[in-house]
Length: 291
Image (cartoon, rainbow, N blue to C red; front, side, top):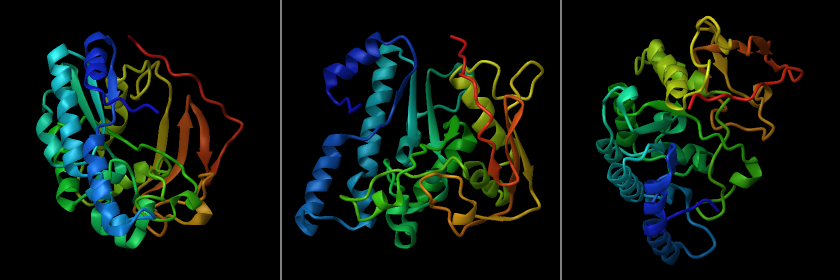
């Protein structure tokens, strides 16, 4: 259990840790109160999935993120806030250049794509922590990414079995598989005019390498590792069980048609994906960091 919500322990971490502190921000006290209220209405067995964003509420997210930012400011700590999900939280972050920030933030693909309207169609397949919330929250995240309040795009990839995703708020696991289609989702937003292609490269490649100080990656430069993706922007791609690469065997994007197809993927200069298949014989290398 990685949960830390004791005030004294949190203060000690922010005061003493001299490296990047990455946090998932949701206020457990608020979540417990919300959960108990819905249990009184629906019982102890389960709660309909559409109430997930009311249990793990926007207020729970904001209060926790605000506390983390306050502690980072107080102790001059290096803070990175993971997978933000609400419009209100965006007020906590700066539009300064990444190189000048001590407090950085990220959005995940699913919070940039889905809204609470999708629970009726997809149910617990889109149950994540933090929860997918309102359309205005999603749009605020997109705006904050464009204004550079949010610095990077991530996935929070969690490949639960579909059998673990059955039920509602109390029974279904939180999280889902996202890495296979994360780039295509972002490229679809570019196709819709939400972001530019160059901006997506910045937020998914350049900025993560800078933020985490990853050595010799994230850019197409002489001497850097050739981690590349070859995209066909004129070949639509429909997600189906037949083309999933996940061992968990499902995706929240099944049935979705994207305007781009990933043709090849290179890691360390070697082709690791081509013709719809992963080349299992190719192995990766450990990341190195410049700290």
